[in-house]
Every structure is written in structure tokens, then in C-alpha cells.
Image (cartoon, rainbow, N blue to C red; front, side):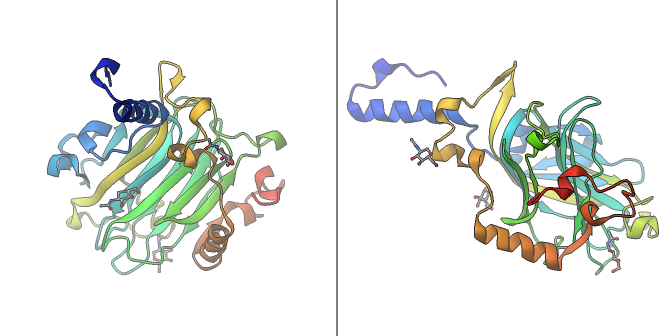
Amino acid sequence: MTTSSSSWPNATGVVLLVSLLFITTSTVVPANNFYQDFDITWGDSLAKVLNNGELLILSLDKASGSGFQSKNEYLFGKFDMQLKLVPGNSAGTVTAYYLSSQGSTHDEIDFEFLGNLSGDPYIVHTNVYTQGKGNREQQFYLWFDPTADFHTYSVLWNPQTIIFYVDGTPIRVFKNSDSRGVPYPKNQPMRVYASLWNADDWATRGGLVKTDWTKAPFTATFRNFTANACTWSAGKSSCSISNSNSTQNSWLSQELDSSSQARLKWVQKNYMVYNYCTDTKRFPQGLPLECTLINS
Ligand SMILES: *[C@@H]1O[C@H](CO)[C@@H](O)[C@H](O)[C@H]1NC(C)=O
Ligand SMILES: *[C@@H]1O[C@H](CO)[C@@H](O)[C@H](O)[C@H]1NC(C)=O
Ligand SMILES: *[C@@H]1O[C@H](CO)[C@@H](O)[C@H](O)[C@H]1NC(C)=O
């Protein structure tokens, strides 16, 4: 934005100008237009933007899935997306919504929604990759039907913590334990990605239930993407240290308060399906380090 101060003759104007500058230099102003924020990168016409950029529909048929990625790269942010998942018999399908950097030592923060037969529950599969290594799966059932309406799935990623949220309820936390030897994503900018694809070799009941292609095309709908985030461009962040304390950037220092902690416990107690941190059979040499640290 370019604004000449001479066009602001009075004190009100100056205050307005200062606050405008503050907002534009602090974080990305939340926007939700799919034309503006994303490129369709897979599946051609199987991915469609509708309603002037308000909605994005991904489809999967026997020939192909589809997907999109953010135009921006980000280094830290709070990312909200509303999704309405594949309805009916969605067995074998996976809808993914994730953040990822590039390369063999990439970082990644994943939400994957594993479809099921009509009436059987979806699984929300989550993972965190650091320096190219994942194997940190946690899976959950939801406390609602994710195909009946839109729900908000969020990733908070700041220097202290990564938190996965469903409708504002935290379901998973991955804390920065870098100082204790667990790599944490903090140097590599990431894009936001989403896709819908066939994974009937593993997704539903471990691959037992296959995709029913007579029900194709399968569709998942995305709405209201909001990034309160630091964009990364030409080696520079849009966020500067001096304003990291503003309310605009409150997400940058956000952690779980005690009521969120209680919600997290409720989800983990009642809806958690799988936790790599308790899978001693899988890790006979010992659980991953972050699992043995208190509060990880
Ligand atoms: C699908 O439904 C079955 C039976 O209720 C359940 O065991 C499984 O966890 C559900 N989800 C997936 C993705 O397989
Ligand atoms: C869009 O998302 C933002 C951020 O999550 C939220 O505050 C707002 O209520 C959402 N709008 C609608 C129409 O759901
Ligand atoms: C900065 O953050 C600290 C701690 O959260 C708070 O006490 C202080 O008022 C903040 N300062 C500004 C200018 O927002």
C-alpha cells in the first residue's frame, strides 16, 4: 500500500495512517478468497473455485484426485480452514489439509481426514515432520458428523508450540523441545496445501475397505481460509520483532491456557484412536524423545 502523508491533513488522518501502516507491516490481513490465496496444482477441472472465490471444491474420480496450494509461504502463523468432508460412502478417500516446506529435510504439519462407509466414523489423522522425519501419528474420532456441515480445522504454529484445533478445541500439541534435542520447525517457510485422493490401500480400517468407484466423483468443500501469519518472501519475514507484541500477533505467543488444557484432555481421553507416544511395540528401542518429556 502506498499512501502519501500530505493527503492526511489533520491528526485523525495521521493516527489512521499510522494504524494502517502498522497493520500492513505486522501480519497478513486475514482474507478469504481462494483466487487470491491459492493456486490449483493438481487435477485441473476436478478442482473448482466458486462464488467469487468463497468456496473451493475438490473432486476425486477414478482417473485423478485434485489439490491446491497457497501462493504465499509462511514462517509461523495461525491457519484456519472450514471444511465439509466427502459425504456418504467416503471409504478409501483421504482429504488432506497441511503445511509443508520443501526438500528432503522438510517440515510438515498434517491434518488428514480418512473416509469411511456411510455412518461409520471418519478418522482425523495428524502428523508432524521435522527435518524430513515424521512417524509422529496421532488419530482421533470427531464429536460430530464432519460431512453434515462446515467445521473449522486450525493449525497454530509459533516459535513455542504447534497446536491442532477442531472448532477451537485443541486436539494435539507439539511443543518446541529443541533445547532438549527434538528438532522443531522454525527455519523453513511452509505453504498451505490441500488435496483429495484415493488411499484405499491404507485409509479405511487399515485398507480393508476399498473405494466404491460407483459413488465417484467424491467431493470435499473448503471455505473461509484465514491466515494470521508471517509471510516469507525473498528471505524476509513480514513480521518484525518490534511489533510481535501487538494484539494482531497474539497468536505468536499463544499457548494453551488451563481451560484449553482441560479441553485437550477431554479430547484425548474420549476421542483419541491412536497415539505413537504410547505405541511401545512400534518403538522397541524406546519411545521417541518428545514422548518421554513432561508436557510434550
Ligand atoms: C471406520 O469404521 C470402523 C468401524 O466402525 C472403525 O473401526 C474405523 O476406525 C473407522 N474409520 C476408519 C478411517 O477406518
Ligand atoms: C471465517 O473464519 C474466521 C477465522 O476463523 C472466523 O472468525 C469467522 O467467523 C469465519 N466466518 C464465517 C462466515 O464462518
Ligand atoms: C507486551 O507483552 C507483555 C506480556 O504479555 C505485556 O505485559 C505488555 O503490556 C505488552 N506490551 C505492549 C506494548 O503490548
